Image (cartoon, rainbow over all chains, first blue to last red; front, side, top):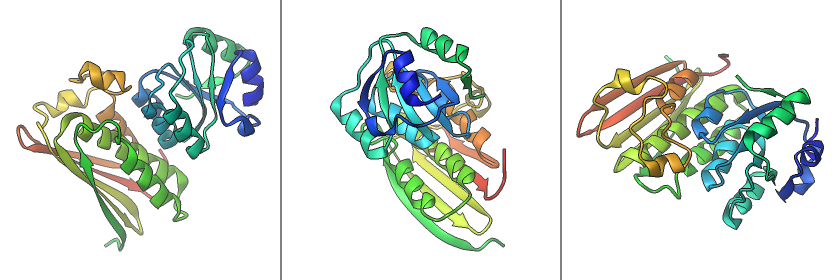
Length: 114
Length: 145
């Protein structure tokens, strides 16, 4: 599934990286704890989190995550989005909660990293 | 003996949450440009980032040194901080002494040290209460976990 398809499925706004929505996604990680994201050295295509500070993008970059979706209607400030653009990481946001997002993506065949 | 190819040291400022992680990003760029095994670089950068966050969260200051040899990547992170009274306890997943401020940053859930150990091929902690802590990690090149 591509990021563009996920965007439609989760009714996301695209906050950064519109040009990279063609990325293919199969492995997903979802947490508000950054160490959960960092726990597995495999690269992951997508991270779902409710944490919108600069560390969320820093963690995505360090962990090799290619795109970030913020859940529960949370939106990061401009500095965070500029940082994401700088790192080439697309950023999406949806009002859906993490449980709902994970359920929808799992039903579509995406899987978690463990 | 392994031949040393590169050595860089960085100063980490304690309590500076705004800059936290910048050094690990620099290391990612530094090692990423050398054509090394990508998985080894990713594991190194994860260990560096967790270690850097620990120094920022708990210590006054610290130094992170990355040493590349023809066999592995070594990280030495030495801080001036409170030290760890019970290393066995600190190594347990989920055990944490973090403050609310640290948790709001997305850290301090008791995963940092276990993550470092998991991502390193060799891992050692030296600590003295009231003085500081050193974390020594080795990531072998072309090895797989």
